[in-house]
Structure formats: structure tokens, C-alpha cells
Length: 245
Image (cartoon, rainbow, N blue to C red; front, side, top):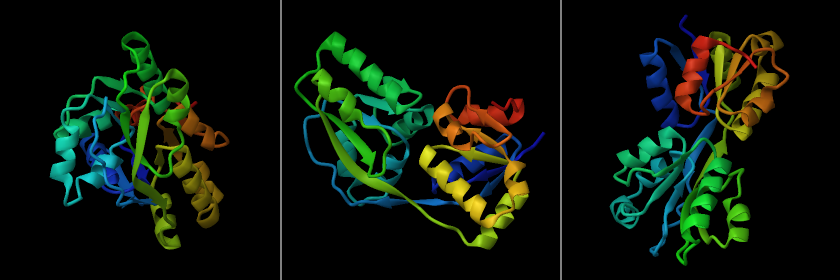
């Protein structure tokens, strides 16, 4: 049965997800509650061991910079290690190497990197991490005790925004499902729903979370599903299987 899915992600991610939902026969309802902003921090030249990307957002921002061609030249020969199949695809689309480490989440990726370093040795060159300024996982906390060097470059921030109250009410009233991608943005959405909409509208929503950690934010809601593979394709599948936690 077609679902009406509330998408509160930043653009252009929301646009990509909306296209996937339409292709699967569902109706996207786009209500951006966050906005990508370029920090302007340059990607420095250097001899890196590899590149870490935890979402498509870093590339979304960097590809809008006038210096993107020069940035890509610095990155295109590096091994690429990512979180999520969507990020892996974004790396390929940007002209980077096919990722050879792909994990469901940042903790899983850190574990894979540590495992590789244990086999090959940590090496002397640092790993480059193109990151958000508002991130929840600290790679360096995991890597440092293992002798793995990391240089984190904060190239973007994901700023939370508050849409007009009438737009929130209209979107929630039209939706029967809501996608949740991170604890931070899920908490923000719940705050907006509690402030601007009726309790009945909120409790009627089927929340689909990308991971158990994100699902915990809406643990008190009656209808919560978790993507089996911790990625967007599985979130779409969860609409159809409708097996709440």
C-alpha cells in the first residue's frame, strides 16, 4: 500500500530520497528541518593514507565549491572508507575510487579500520576525515590508542531549522510515515511535532528509523520500525513490511 512519507532531511538529500520513494510507489512529503552549510574550511594538501566519509553531505558541499576540481585531484587516488551504500555511490559519482570499506555506521567503520591496521600496521600517514562540525561519533577516540593518525577537516555543518508552524501542521497532517536518520534530527523533529501539532497526529505516524540508536529517540511512540540493513533502501522496505519494533 502506498505510504505518504515525511522527509525532514536537508537538501539535496531529501530530493534524492523523494525520487526513490516515488519510484517505489510512495508519496514523499518534503519538510526540510535542517540545512547544509559550507564551513569554508579548505581541504589541505597532504599525503593521506585513506579518506573517510560518513555521509553524502561532505561531497554535496564540496562539489559546490569553485575549487572542486582541485580538491578532487587530491582525493581521487585515495582508498575510500565510508558509512552506508548511499555514501559509497556518492563517492563513485564524484569521481573517487570505489570504496573498499563500507560499514552500516561510524562505529562499525572504525572497527573495520582498526582491524585493517592490526593486519597491515597503522602506517605513518594520517587518514583524512571530511566531517561535519556537529557529529556524534569520535573516530579519534577509537584510533588514537591504536596508533592510527587521523586528520579531521570540518567542511560542513548541518544546521537545524524551524519551518513555519502552518507548514509543519500541513505536512504532518498529510503524512502517515516519517523517516528518521540521526538522533539529533529525530529529537529536533519530535520537539517540533510536540510544539506545533496534535498528539493524535504524532501518535498516528509510523516512524522508520535507520538504526536502533535513532529508534531509541522515539521509543515511546506506538509504531516504530528499524531498517534491517541500516540504510535507506531498507527504510523503504520497512514501509512495506511494516514490522514495528
